[in-house]
Image 1: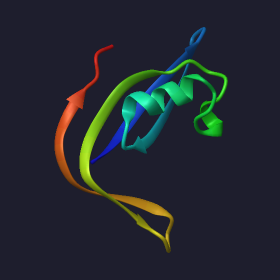
Image 2: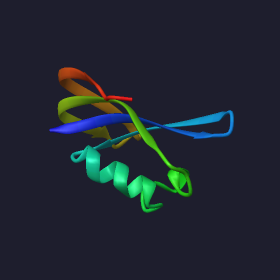
Image 3: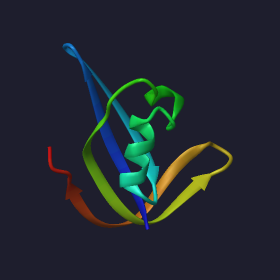
Image 4: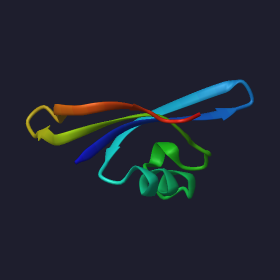
Length: 79
């Protein structure tokens, strides 16, 4: 099972968003908030806005794009 998630960071009146994927949402958000996640997310505090659960995540190696297959259900994270 994989999770595609959207996180949001606010600094004064400027919002920044980031979309990622993981097999453990709580751990991944903790990594982002401890500046050990993706380089883009370092140095900011993030809040989970949305996530969706999928059975499979398949990387298309030739195009370096991600295809997401077979969604289980939509989940709205609490704000």
